[in-house]
Image (cartoon, rainbow, N blue to C red; front, side, top):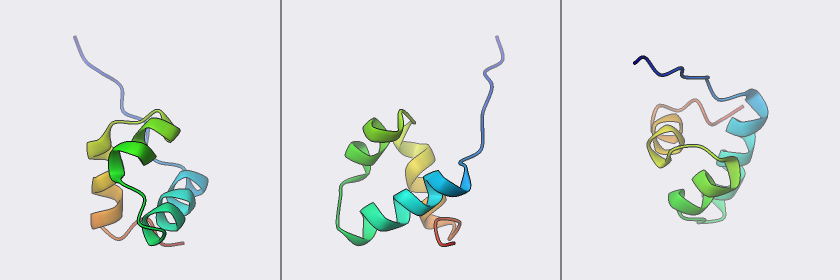
Length: 51
């Protein structure tokens, strides 16, 4: 069974960047966005969180 992956929106990336700047833990960000922590962490590490 294939799963569908939806890319992070610009707004989600902006929120991630702000929250990470404020030292919010990745699991909490993931909960707030209803996204897997690996998605949140991957976007931040790849530099796509900056807008």
